[in-house]
Image (cartoon, rainbow, N blue to C red; front, side, top):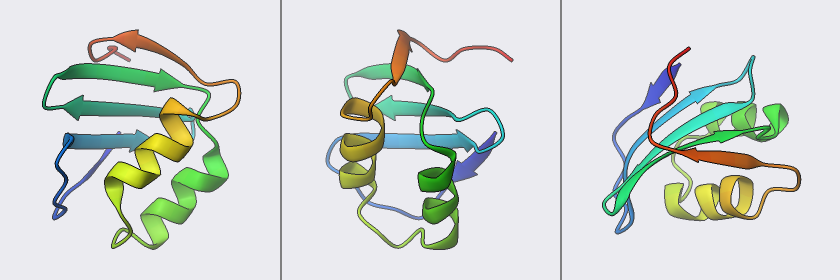
Length: 77
C-alpha cells in the first residue's frame, strides 16, 4: 500500500492504494472502506498526477467504478 498525502478533501481523510492488487483503502470522515478491483490504470494515473481532486477520483474510480467491490473497514493483506 502506498499512502497518498498532501491533499485536502471535505469527505476523504486518508487514502492508500495498491496498484498491483487494484486495491484502495479510503478513510472517509464518516468511516473506513477497502475497495477491490479498482482500475490499475487509474491508480497509476493518480500516482503520476496526485494534484487532482481526491474526492472526485474516489467517486469515479471506487464508488462508481465498474466491477468494484468493497468491505467496511481496512482489509489486512
